[in-house]
Length: 102
Image (cartoon, rainbow, N blue to C red; front, side, top):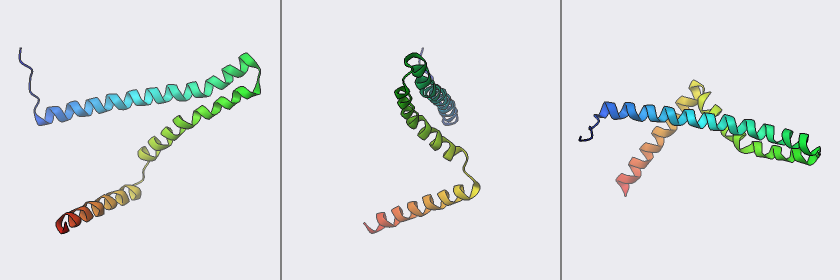
């Protein structure tokens, strides 16, 4: 049986579904990583009774930074979105001008 070719609209939908699945997997991994980074020092302290085990809280920095990036992207206000659009348009116009000159 020959493989089916996807039309432009179907491939776009397939890409959207795949992106959604990847985002969901990313959020699940990020949530688990954050919970593990919080729980590990507490569990280590319960077993060892050593205050030095709380130095493991530094493992929270990578997931906290990723949460910051996600929140910054998701919680953008309209002014920020418009500013980003204007920056992108200006950048593309500058690229077109430099291509014409060169």
